[in-house]
Image 1 (cartoon, rainbow, N blue to C red):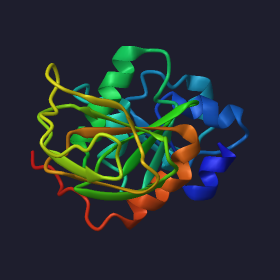
Image 2: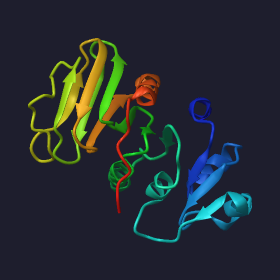
Image 3: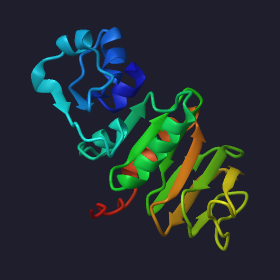
Image 4: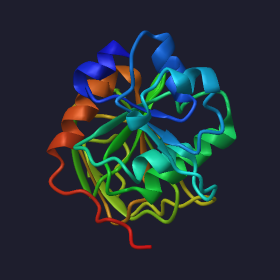
Length: 206
């Protein structure tokens, strides 16, 4: 956690995630969620001014956080766990808040939604997996299998297990629905790439 905090010092916990923060000897700057998984004992340790309860059940706690945080970049830890349904819901949350750059940080891999244009430094052979959550029109340079003209779409064609040719990888995508999946050691490169991306997706209406 300390490695992530050096890049993103403000610490926000999603509901029961506050327990892991407190158990690490840290105090969250804010806790956001419906609080259905925040125990009374842990809640009592957190000042009321840091607690932001959102009772509605139409969004996940991750989405509640994403929709209420304004930051140059969010590093989200603890969302790449053993439950596939939770992980799929988190990918949905990335799409719902496409305007907010975010990296899901797991033990072995990292995941982000591709911005409209991305330039990423990658060593030759580095894994550059791309998974469409909808019809994704994209083009690229620096990939072993270029994306231009590839009909990326769920149930039709995905872009997993692509590889960098070495140097700069550029990706342009027409809609906020393409997941970028990299190995954990590329976290620094992806942080730099997202911070330098020329423009984010617009805020979603509705």
